[in-house]
Length: 345
Ligand SMILES: C[S@@+](CC[C@H](N)C(=O)[O-])C[C@H]1O[C@@H](n2cnc3c(N)ncnc32)[C@H](O)[C@@H]1O
Image (cartoon, rainbow, N blue to C red; front, side, top):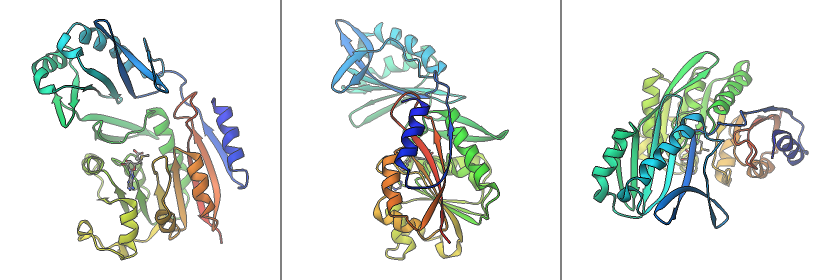
């Protein structure tokens, strides 16, 4: 689907609502900063491959991947093909790049300890941050931490993360999403922000500068580990990151359950004017929709407009003020959007 088709689809899906609509285009080529490929073994050679349903087909190049990844792809393949131990039982590769950095993950169906020396030489020869994985094992060569720098309205935000963290796939569009949110929230009355599904703090850090205080929660331990590092990197002091599922956080705020992780936090001290939600494709559970209703303003970042639409059915007390479409995944059926909701008066 192109941007016009996605816009029409969204407008049709949300036709029962009245809202301002805006869309943001991406570069159509070289936009992806992460790429996962399968490996196809043929005779004595390996090729990059993708799946179409259950069918694997060979991929010679990938124009949607950014230039860093495109440049590295042939070098990696050549080096792997010239080494029997490295190509044997290899079944997948994952490229992850940032504006400043790059890592490669190799996925094996064999014990990677046996090829540790070869992997090290491979990482050295390509000067590459390399991660190798096989069942229950992980080896890291050089480093796995990537540095990222986002530029939002001429201000730089610094991040670190690894490929075990969630990260947005299109850096340009990610920056546009953050810029748009800052612009939309600029003139609103704001106090504290409650953010659920915060990842490593992608939105949290820039937003922390326009709210008094932020409580940000996330399920994954790795994401929270890096969110805390990112807070320090940017000298931010007004965010409290908590590793809790959104469902558990709902229980905590209703005092239905006590959590040791919340022993130093008195949630009653906060005045949340806004809640920001960026859930996985399935959208929000019933408990989280109920939690969201405690707050006057809801910002809902969605990678699945269908689940967003379903959740809105249970948020009838709110008006959908704005809906923004971000073409994060160009020419695919995937739609990323942000909805801004306000409780009706
Ligand atoms: C779409 S990502 C958004 C991450 C972040 N906002 C960003 O922009 O990088 C969704 C995040 O929700 C987390 N997550 C998934 N299920 C969750 C749950 N039930 N409670 C809290 N976090 C959850 C995932 O670990 C992931 O980091």
